Length: 216
Length: 240
Image (cartoon, rainbow over all chains, first blue to last red; front, side, top):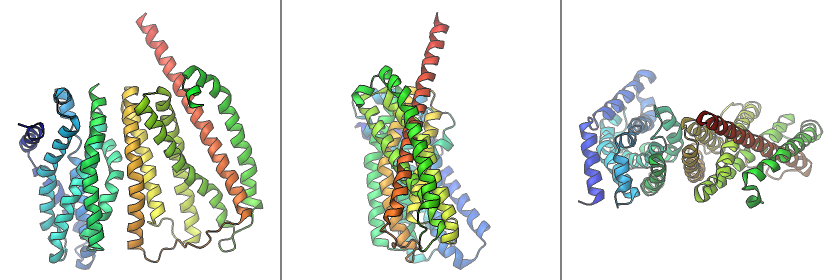
């Protein structure tokens, strides 16, 4: 089995054994449930504020998944094995990110549909919201790999990780929420795709550089 | 000059007199620039005396970005040549840059209240300055969260380079976003040609900020090096 496929399957199995997307989905539903409770059920207000809030909740659900991403590998010695492997560490990190996106990002994007409908988003815009979330979670994973790798050796890294990663989330949030709100969709969707691709390309490189230091 | 200073012993000898000289220069320029800017420069024909906060605000904005660029350079040197002084320099500059960014945000807010009628506006420049400030905080927090100094230095250097890629993207995104959300921005593009009588104090203040940055960074670096020496001495004492 190729190193990519092996890591991808291992990560999927680990994520699945850890409850899969259940906890982040529950977080996503719970966070978006609080929105109408805080804002009131006013339909007109929700139509405007709903889609961006779906985006914020998805970003936070993704953020919550990052802390343990490399910490477990560092603690149980898997990281040393990855470094010893002839496959480039960047590829292994990329596989981990891909597995995270498939196991958590895509379910979040799909769950965005019922949540957006419940928050009174116009029905014809729901496919667009799901597509924007699928791309956006990929960009979040790219940025998150960097933050998780930088903080892998820090105990209780949660807040520090958020502080590092949230500025990196800014571009995808801007363009993703713009797509979800139906403003200037074509241009925003193009740039959101660019964010996702840049995250997929640059995230593993920076994360691998950080992980090499963590293992020293 | 950098090759000369790359030797820590020579650096300490150089900074021992360079830091106080820079500090004295900064104080002289502030002593000249602040009265010049706040009392003797002409008031703005539209904004009157409130425009004078510009002399505090604009140099802080310039140098908060300049300091970050300095840190990016130092981080690059640190990652490529693994030089310990580059680590120390980047770390020493970060709090100075963060305070400059905070000064820029606070004075901008104070200036916005009377002229725009609001303390905060999600304008493109303000938002990207806020992101820069948060980036500084993340950088400082990462440094202090990791105990092993050498590892902390390299990881922080990676974060700095990532931030250097992120910040222009944020700048561009936020510009795009704010033009989308606020077609009638209160930031007018008028008043771009600055009068020579205002340029003098502005450049003096910018020079003062730069010298202050140099002095504070050198002093931070010196104290970091002294701390490391003390720790090493204690380690030797414990081992013997």
